[in-house]
Amino acid sequence: MNIDIKGIVIICGNYGSGKTETAINLATTRKTDGIDVKIADLDLVNPYFRTREAKDSLEKMGIEVILPDKKYMHADLPILAPAVAGMIIQPSELTILDAGGDDVGVTVLAALEDHLSKKQVHMLQVINPFRPFTEDVKGCIEIKEEIEHSSKIKITGIISNANLIDETTPEHIYKGYNFIKDVSKATGLKIEFITAPSHLIPELKIDQFTCPVLEINRKLNLPWKKGLNT
Image (cartoon, rainbow, N blue to C red; front, side):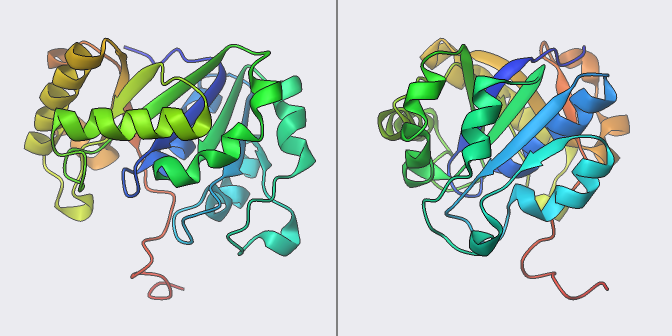
């Protein structure tokens, strides 16, 4: 089952949900499918996991990457490149906005309200049930409501990104899938897809899932591993 997402897609979620890795892999997967893709890094909160780290590899694939102004590349300031508004006004087949984590990180979207309100926008909440605050359905709904309030945009779909990084097993993926079904039932939101590390794909019974599976190839360095491999 292929992922058939097009238009303007905002990827959001709580801190540590894996939304940036999800956004980057969604971009590369859809580009491989032959779709024209742009991606903007709006994460002005998290100093570690950012789309800008994968800029070179994305651009080599022909994916346009929009970043904050160069002098603010390592700063945590609410400064947006005018190009972000431009890519919303003239989006590609798939335009991905990688928003910051939690309700604080998505406040930058409110600055784009005038542009976004004129477009059909899909905002997808990435959920990892093995992270604090989203280990139960109630927590996921609270995060959802906080993000919607701060961004002034309604979440339209959900994504399961169930993982424990290097300790992830097929059982974690299955558990995450069952959990996201509970969230979907409680909220009425569509499950857009679930994620699974590429090395686990052969071990999974894909036909057990009623939604697409996004294969994750890690594009970002873990902060505690930086500098270990040169």
